[in-house]
Each structure stands twice: as structure tokens, then as C-alpha cells.
Image (cartoon, rainbow, N blue to C red):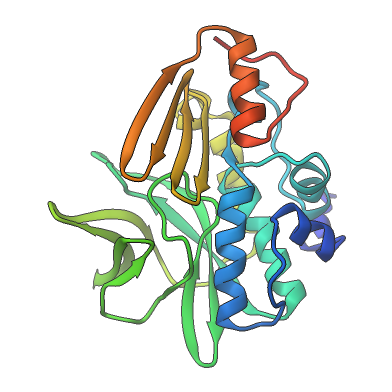
Length: 267
């Protein structure tokens, strides 16, 4: 008999998680808190797939395992890890929320499976879309899900398109509208993500098995490590550094992302 209860376990230590996020604001089930939590998470907890790509390890998504990895060992993770633990935090604070399964359609040229997880939060009768686990262009706060208007987050413009059945989060640029994430607004259960996580962690078709991805939002831009190329986006300018040795990779992970691992990194 499989034991799925750890997927529903309560958050072990709220204060320790908030400290990991560098969050010192109000802790209430309101929009100010939600936006503060999303921003703090994006700027302190990296999106990363080191366990999948470099270590080729199993990826548990139960709450105790995620807390140990992200909070105790100060690692990051990908969506099924980051958004799962973030959901546990929101529930612990008292938010009315539920998870949804998502297709990443950003730059997609073919049919895409459900390979992402996000959270819908209801506050004072309004629904918001919150995501702390997308490695692509993402809003730095929650977006009002039922608004037909363009919403601005740190200079980026976003809009929800509901014309085709599913809801699609789009980014609006000077070149046009760019589709990012497509999802049904129907609630999912934490157990529903087991098979999706297994695909992302183990399938040869998973992008996470094919290259290293590490991302972190910064106050003036972002840091991204793709393979062995480190890109720093700062005030609209991009600098690129090719890391040529494992020692340089470890130094970049430590100094840029606050990550230290005890397994061998691929070159």
C-alpha cells in the first residue's frame, strides 16, 4: 500500500521557511502578504534542476522531503518542488488556495504535456494566479486571474487570454503577445502531480534531463545558468560568461545562487 499522506503533511516550520525566503513582512491571508511572499521566494530560492540533470536522482515531492531540501539544505528546485512547498506555506498561513496543472507553451512549436504546477488563491472574492516555480519570464507577484486588463509587474506586462477554453497567461511585448502558460482552472490534488513529476525527472524527453537550468530573480534583473553559460541580466543589459571547469561551476552556483551540492557536476 502506497502512503500518500506525506504529500499532505503540514508545513514543519513556518518561521524557518520565511527566514529562508528572506521575508520579514506581514503574515496574513491577504494580497499584500501574497505578493510579498511571491517576490521574496523568487529572489531567494532558485529555480534549479541540479538533482535531475547532474545527480540523476529521484525527486520526492512530499512536504517533509521538500522542506529538508529547500529550507534545511538551502537548495532550490523546479515547479513540482517549489510550488508544492509554497502551497503548504499558503495553507499554513490560512489562504484559500488550490493547485493547478499547467502546460508550458512558451516558445513551444509542438503539442506540450502538462509539466508544470501553479496555485490559484482567492482573496476577498477575487482569484489570483501565483507561481514561484517557472524558470521562464514570470510576474514577480500574483496576478488577478479574472481581470481582462493588462497587468504590469516590474515593467513586464501580462494578460490572461480565456478565448480558447483553457486560460493562457501571456506576456505583452512591443513585438506582440507571447503565450507562456496554459491551464485549466479546475483544482488538482497534490497526488495528481506524482506522475507529472516522474515524467519531468525521469523521461528522456524531459528538458530537465537534457541541460542544466538555474535561475534567480535579482533586484535589478536576473541570473541564469544554462548548461555551463552564466548570464546576468542587469538594468536591461546582458553579460555572458562561459564556465570552463567544474570548479568554476561550483563557484558560480555558490556565489551567484547560494547553492552548494555534494555530487559531481556534468561538463
